[in-house]
Amino acid sequence: MSKYEAIINFINYEINNKNITYGEKMPTIRELSEKFNCSKQTVVHAYEIMQKNHIIYSRPQSGYYLIDKKELYINDFNKIIDFSSGSPDESILDYKEFQHCLNQAIEIHKATLFNYSSPKGLPDLIFTLKTYFENYQIFCSLDDIYITSGSQQAINILCSMPFPNGKSNVLVEQPTYHGTLKALETTKTPIIGIERKFDSLDLKELEKKFAYGNIKCFYTIPRFSNPLGISYTNNEKKQIIMLAEKYDVYIVEDDYLADLEIKNNSYPMYYTDTSSKVIYIKSFSKILLPGLRIAAVVLPKLLRNTFEEYKKWTDLNTSVLSQGALDIYIKSGIFNSNNKTIRTTYSERMDALRKVSSEIILPQIKWHIPDTGFYSCIEFLNNINIDWLIKECDKKDILIKGMDNAYLKDYFNGDILKISVGNCSTSDIENGIHELLKIIQIYYNNI
Image (cartoon, rainbow, N blue to C red):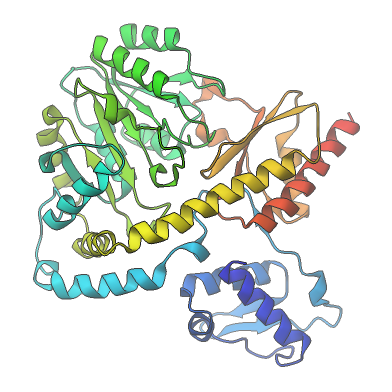
C-alpha cells in the first residue's frame, strides 16, 4: 500500500470512529507528514483525492475540514485510479534519504552556492556519473559529460543549436514525448515525422528520410518509448546507427528509463556507436525526484563547445545544490539500493497488468505490454470513440487521456490508448483495468 493510500485509510478510520467530526479541522499536513514519514506533497495528494470525492474541503490559509454531509458513508469512498499520469509514484521515491544528501551538500558546497559555477556542471558529479554510466555500458570521458536542468533543457538546447552537418530538420518518432514536440515548436525548428509501429521501425523509410530529409538529428527513445512503452532490439539499434553514419545524421538518444531495465543484454545505442553520432541523454526525474531537475548529456567532441555556449546563456549554471545532493546520493550507494526496489516495483506492476488484461478477452483490442517501464498500450482493432471512453472512465474515477499531444498533425492515430502504471499500485491496476475493459466491452456491444 502506498503512503497516500495509508493516509486516506487512516483518515477514514478516524472519521468512522468519530475522532474527527463534521466541520472539524483535519490533521495538518505537517502532522501527517511526520506521522507517516513521508513528504508533505504525499499528504497533499491524499487530501486532494479526498477533496475530489467530496469528503473534505479546504479553507484558504486555514486547512482542511470534514464536510458536513449526513449521508456520507466512508465505505463508499472511491479512490482515483490514474492511468494518465507520466509522473512516478511518490510513495516509493526516497525523499527522506535524499534530504540527508541535500543537507550534506549544503555543508560541502556552501561556498559554491553563493557564486556562479561552471555551465558544464559540478566536477564532483561529472566524475561520479562517469563511473555510474559505465554500469550501463556508456563509456565516455569526463569532457563528454554535461549537466543540464532536466532532460527538457537538454532537448531544448539540441533543438536550437546548429550541428556540424549543417542540416536543419529534426526527425522524430510518431508518436513521441510531447515535451520534445513542444520544444521543437517553441524554437521554430522544422520537424519531420516517421511512424514507429509496435513491431518495428521501417528502416527503408528511415533511410529515405536520412538521405533526402535534410535531417540534422533523429530524436529517439529506443528503450521503453514514451508513449508506446516499446523498445528497439539491439540489431535495430545497430542498423539505425549505421544509417546515421552513412548519411551524416546525429542521433539524440533519450534513455530516461534506463534504470528500470531488467534484461542483461539490452544496451543503449551509445554503446555500439563508433562514429560519434550518438548524443546520450539520461534523466533522473522518473526514478529519483521529478523536482530535482537534473539530467546528464554525453556529447560527441564536435558538439561540446556549441552546446556549452548555448547552455551557459540559457541559465548560466544548473543548481549546485541539486547536483551536489545527487553526487552524494549516488556515491553513498543509496541510489543503487533504492533503484533495485523501484525496478522490482515497476516490473511487478507490468506483471499485474499482463495478468488482469488476460482475464477479459476482447477481440476488438490488442495489448502491448513490456516487461517493465511506465507505459503500455491498448491498440483498438475496431474504431472506438476515445472521448466517450475518457468520460465513461471518469465516471468510475479512472483517469485516462488521449494521445493527441504525442503526434504531429499528419500522423495522429486515434486507435491507440496509452496506459501508464507510473502512479498506480498493483491493486489500482487490477481494479482499474477490470473496469476499463468492462466499459470498452459495453461500447462494442452497443454498436
